[in-house]
Length: 149
Image 1: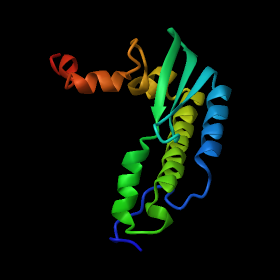
Image 2: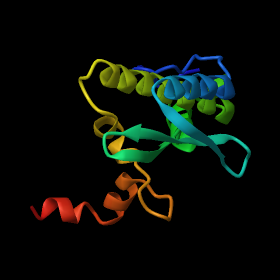
Image 3: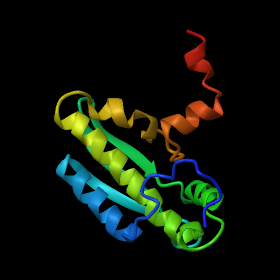
């Protein structure tokens, strides 16, 4: 049962397992030139992120794409009071489908020359030793180095 008439989350009805979707993402990244791919799991054994290395104009770069399952779950629970759409397992399926759709769109921009790998994946770049992405570093600094210019 739904709790409102607002638009539903993208892919909320998917029945495709998260692992199958991640395999699709992996194949697409490999086709685009990724030569290392790592799967990360959360404490519950649910796939949480995909990290990959790919050659760019400036050399190899590593990127981390999180699925943010708990955030997806919170949205689904807000849209559905009960049933399969409100379950965390469904949130994993939906979250990974969203990441797949986004990744496909970014790879299409790269393939057509409309953007580079660095342009579309830069917020997800893992440049430091602590594993944080560029976005996470900038968020923690409240974007101050960028705002001073």
